Each structure stands twice: as C-alpha cells, then as structure tokens.
Image (tube, rainbow, N blue to C red; front, side):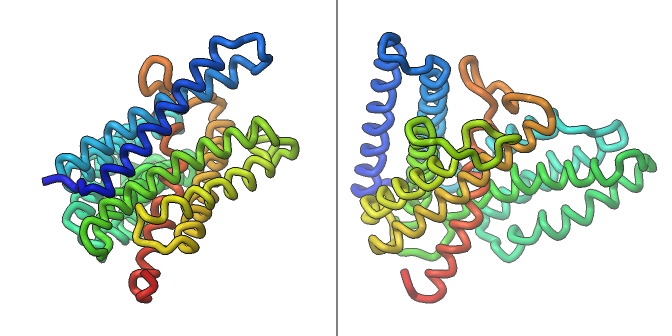
Length: 316
C-alpha cells in the first residue's frame, strides 16, 4: 500500500518547505503595506499558495493509499472542473442527455481505464469515440440552434478537463523501475507548482511586453521566458527525484513550464469570451478549481508522451 520510499519522502518534505516559505513570505507582504507592493498582487499570490497547499494534500493522501486512490482523486477533480466549465458555457435543454453521458459515462470510464492501465483504450476513448458520440447525440435531440457551438463547447470541456487531466495520474503507469513511476508524478507536480510561481513572480518583477493584451494584462514575454528559465534550473536541481539525467530533467521541466503557461493563457481566453473573472469558487478565498489546474491539464499529456517516448527509445 502506498508509493512512498525515502527519496519520495524527501521530495515531499522539500515541497512542504517551499510551500511553508511561500506562505510566510505572503503573510509578511500582506502585513508590510508600507513597502509599496500592490495588495491585489499579494492577495493573488497568497491565493495561489493556498490552492497548492490543497492540491499537495490531495496528492499526499493518494500517495499514502496507493495509485488507484490517486486516480480516483484526480477523477473527482476532473468532474468538478468539467462542471465549472459547462456551467459557464452555452448549452440547451436538448443537450442534457448528452451531458449525462459526458459526466456519468465517459468521465468515470476514462479514469477507470487509466487505473486499469489500458493505454490503448483510454488514449482514444474521448478523442475518437466521445467526440463522435457528442455531435450524433445532440443531432438526435432535434435541436439545431447553435449546433456547432454547442458540440464544440462540450467537446472542448471534455478534452481539457477530463482527457488531458487524466494523463497526470496516468504517469504512474509508465514502465519505470519502482518507485520511479510514483516519483514521476511528484516531479511533474512540483515543476508545475514551481513554474506557476516563477511565471507569476517574473511577470510582476520583469514584465513589460504583453503577449496577448486583449486576453490577459498579466501574461508577458518576460514572465514567460523568466519562468521557463527558472523552471529549467529547478528541474535540473530535482533530477534526483525523477528518472531523468540532469539535462533531460531541465528540458522536461521547460516543456512542462511552456505547456502550463499555454494552458493558463488558453483558459484566460475562454474566460474573456464568457465575460467572467474566475471559473467558480473552490472554497471561500479561492477561485475555481479549473483556475488552479489549467496548467496541469495542458502539461500532463505532453509530459506523459514525451516521457513515454524517451522510455521506449531507451533514453531513460
């Protein structure tokens, strides 16, 4: 039972120390109003730290109880994120039966197949079978108004919130010597968290040139490149917590950082389109769950397949 060994324990300990330090810094900045830091920026930073505490607790619980529990927890997170996504997007009464299949058939089936390590099936279940089922089922309902928009909305939500996120716990199924599969997920999780923080800090300290001003007033080229460089260094420093050599760990960390940043920008575009600031309320003092896991959703499938390629080529 569980996926802990001594190295995994030390990785978790390092993560807890980093989060503790970030919490202390955030609280100090909150009290030191005379230093001129924007209170809204400080509060956003503290919100991010609180969210990563929650996600770390969830991951630790799954690690203690085993891979199946980790998959189940990610499945619950996926269901919650999909609910937030669908709530903010246009659907009609005719879509309700389609949504029943999406929430209560395809979503749990995807994570069941991940738990069963059936890569040949879960890798195509949603992008092939669910994507064909959704437009057909909506057409059978006989409502053609905004047909393409409704189909695309449900397909996009299912792809991002369920299919992509399911590749995070699927990292445990990659054929690596035990206990490396468990540490692979932890390495991924730490890099995503650190990258999120690095991008945020670099944007606030160095950001000048906006990437997409109409979508986000926070996403800058300086923040992207600075966060990418810091994440690469962090990946190299943590190579011992992964199956990679130091240069490989740096490149994989850069890949995770870049995809996570793209995830945040993409989800910001969707929020601007829907005219909302956050996808929902995770808990009091938090934004929606999808606001916190957007980087995980975009980075997980790319990191999974990049790692799987290296393993199949004998490079790991």
